[in-house]
Image (tube, rainbow, N blue to C red; front, top):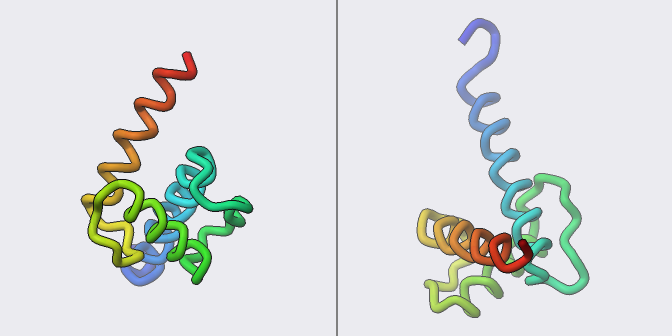
Length: 84
């Protein structure tokens, strides 16, 4: 990858995904107080993911896997439509 290792690429994409999840959870006011939008998957981010999962009948594991990300996207779309 021309000096950009696959590990660095994974870290970059993972941090971008984590930041997006933090932003989405904050927008939906899931955690109180809001999460720091620092792109780090720390214990507060995992706890907020678990809270979101529990509120939306998802498996509560603190991992933003495909089902959790899909539910976040669907709920964000509905929130955006209702805000318009």
